[in-house]
Image (cartoon, rainbow, N blue to C red; front, side, top):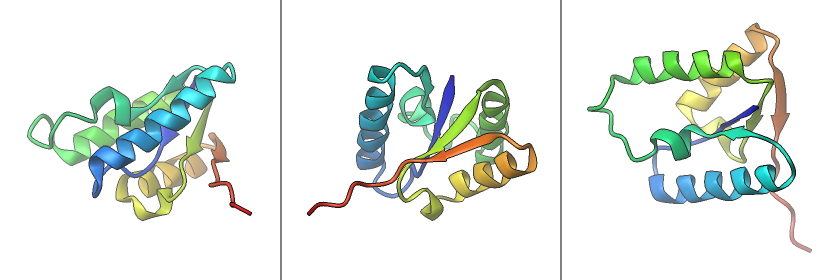
Length: 102
């Protein structure tokens, strides 16, 4: 299973749609995907404190084979934290890039 990391805050619904689209493409390509955007995207910070979200996400990352980062992940506080965690734990990392239009 792969973990799909990326920005959720800001344009929340748009970021959830982006995650859904990439998760769908990866499922179609034969991968099993866990996306926090799609699992808990409609929850609020009142559901659980932010740092507890991150702790839970890291536990899920530990269970996954690799972590794939969505375009613009660098603009996300949570995704950059997840990226640092992956580097520290030698988790396999992949980056999904936006296709350039000609």
